[in-house]
Image (cartoon, rainbow, N blue to C red; front, side, top):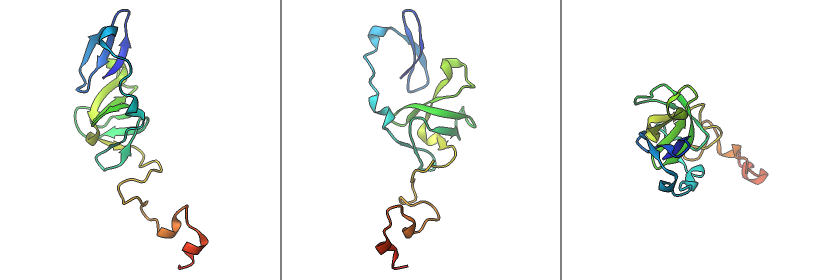
Length: 134
């Protein structure tokens, strides 16, 4: 889960199901999700989404909201929206319920590693010899 509030003697933690609960510091064992910054999930259109990306929720109770991805745990995304006041703006949705906002932000997605409308000679690694056959 994700800590959303730090109290005097306990933390408020949102788990993978979106349920918040109080937890004492001795119940938590350090930072356990260190791989979340490197992790990649797929949205409904098979675009890669990572921490820090902006996504639009396309199904479920949060449909139509735009939020920023803060953490992920398997297929669960912990999103932040400044328009939500409960749980410090953090809520949980499945990755297949979202779509990456603004396209792939320069990433190469599910189109076989090639950008739409590109030709083989448009590669940044093209050499004059490889383009001579045109």
